[in-house]
Length: 490
Image (cartoon, rainbow, N blue to C red):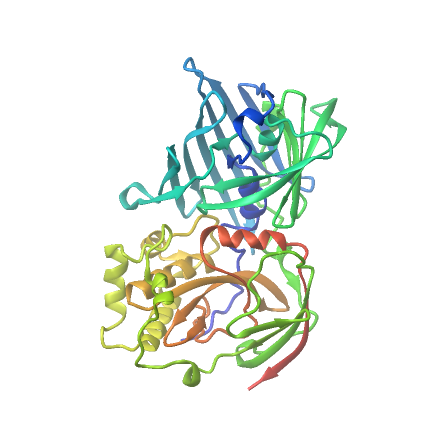
């Protein structure tokens, strides 16, 4: 098969901005581990309706519309609509997110509905709390996946984590951990929120005394400024991103027709050397810095990481692969379906049967499936939550869509498969990217975007897994530094 003749490396999982900005603050679940009796009686007096503009530096790229209703029962309802215009490698897309929540009088979480729509894909999730479980439904109504997430503590929710910190009465210079749940990844993670010195900031033509809170999430720092009623007036994040309260008239102002900030390019890293024909490399050594205290998966398999030096050695299929083997128990879990990798769905299983034969070896199945995904899925930048079934139906997507569909087809064919994410070299830069790991007696790195088996050694694995594990990338974006020390060819 011919190589792809244009750059096709895209941002990791749902787009760079979606990870950095919206996962941190768009209607997150806050699970509070402090007993209710110890929480101070702080309340939030939100306006019934408010707007915020989203900026990348000084350029408007989105708008947020929020509504807050107190019901006669004492419960509260919130609704948040987000519209963003984003560019990834020259392709501009409009992203819409809608989140509805119901809160109990004590601000504990009752239920939610989450919906994400882009020009190409959509994603839905809903859930509710019962006893000590979160009952979660993900995917389109015709193919919903149900799952249950245990809850050790009472789950709390507010518009975002900063309002949660306001509610519990976080004192000046104090900090505490919250556990957040993100509906787009079904992942739960701890996040530390600190109360910093009060500041006076200009908002809508007025100078307002605010309480400043900052959140440390996987090493990524985001800050917010709240007024004395607990309303968020401003937020800042990585890559020059910020949000600020505005008037309805200001929110209604148009965004640029074409987004001129390419976030995949903005988050990428320039290589210190040019690498010719990376697919022919047998080994690469890279010095990595700027990742202190970030939980990454750098060491293991074909990667060896020691003293800040990462060595990646290309797998030898003749040495790595065996034809007669039993799948070990610890690898059988990678045959199981997950909410976004629906390997047990009849459409996925039917397509896998069309691609491979039962008599094929695991390596032959892997090769056939990787080649099929490469040839049949159009290389198109997508900002959404990728799920295998929707990718199979739409036949398009970026590296994330390729990775979830490849994993689903491999598992449906009886080949254990995982998803890896990290950085990949192309045209003088390292871009965030996703690919797969397939088991054929031993684990093999494969990339269906480029039809590589094994994948070339410029694939730098930072994380492995699904859902919330990819949030670890937030801790290194904008901070990780790479220096290629040597590149050995076959």
